[in-house]
Structure formats: structure tokens, C-alpha cells
Length: 238
Image (cartoon, rainbow, N blue to C red; front, side, top):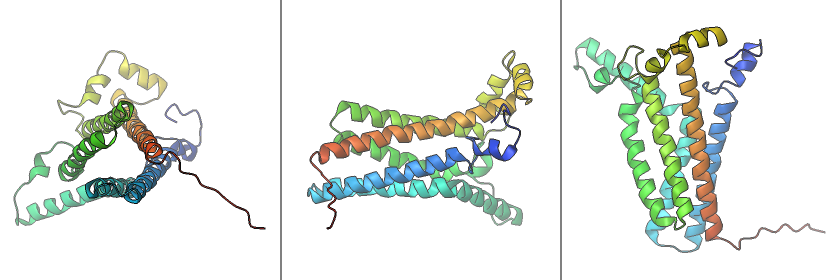
């Protein structure tokens, strides 16, 4: 895609991992939705086993959260709400009805101010709950690594939203390394910062999908341990 190996831009866009209307986005949304389905099956299983009320409620909360995440990934809900809130705050400031807010001084995307505390709190709850529920060490490590991928992806998203001249912008630091700009202009016909920012965003999306894969494996393995003798049979009627 980025090397323009295909002349047709619609085809390149299809394989662009940074776009919300390409194959990567479809894969990510579908994957998250299937993880949510898996969690609802786990919830139904622990409920059928008559586990404690708090265990059942914990799995239901996680299933609800991933169901929301599938909706969010497909609709870009948190990005749109963050931008809407910033617009409303700007209009209020222009009309003189309110002063500057935290979004005026926050250097990156506005959604992080609004949603990140919520996502972070639930991520901490999920880590504690799953650490107690998943007895196998390998499954705990999968959960820890999966959540770590999401934390890293949020960090990259923070960098992506910074102005190019911001002192914390790692993309600018990488682009200013010797030979980077010359290489990107020769290979991609793009200046160094533009190319580095593209691949940083691609890495961010990849980390999210890889983290979701790790969590999915952990949930599936846990369900197999909960219901090791579950069998589905299909009988053809004569």
C-alpha cells in the first residue's frame, strides 16, 4: 500500500491498515465482536454452573464491555464524542459562557481526556478479576500481555495526536534521525515525518488486534477448562 505497488488508489486503501474503511478495520471489528460472543458464552457457562453471584456479574460486565468495544470500533464512538465535546467547549468559550477547560491545554486527542479514565479503570478491574479467575499461569500471562498491548497502543495514539513540533512527539524524533527523511522520500515519495507517523499508526492498530488475539485465546482456553466435556450433536431427521 504505502510503497504504491498498485496504481489503483481504491485497492491501496483497501489494504491500508490505518484507514477505518479497509480490511484491517473490518478484521478488528469482527474480531472484537467474536470475543464478545465468546465472553457471553463464558458468562452463560458460569451461570449454568451456579458459580458465585460476583463471578457471574464479573463475567457479564466484561462481556458487556467488549460488546461496547465492538460497537465503538465500528462507529468510532469515542473519537466522535471527544471531538464533539471539544467543539461544544470551544463554542461556549467563544460565546463567553465559560472559560478554557482541560481540553484547551491537553496536547493530544480530546477523547483521551474523557474516555481514558473510564477505559483505564475498567482495564484495571478486568486485570484483577481475571487474575483471580484464571488459575493457569499461562492464561494470566496472556491477559497481562494483551492488556499491555492496549496500553502501548494508547501511548502511541497519544503521540499520534501531538503537534509535529511538540517536544514529546516521538515521531518527529525518529523522522529527524540521520537518513530517515532521505530514505522515505526516495522509497515512498513522502517526507520523513509523514511516513514515520503512518507506520506508527499502523503499529498502533496492529498492537490492538494482537492484544485482542491474546485475550481471545485466554478466554477460549478458560471456557474449555470450565466445560471440558461439552458436546454438540446434530441428528438428521429421517
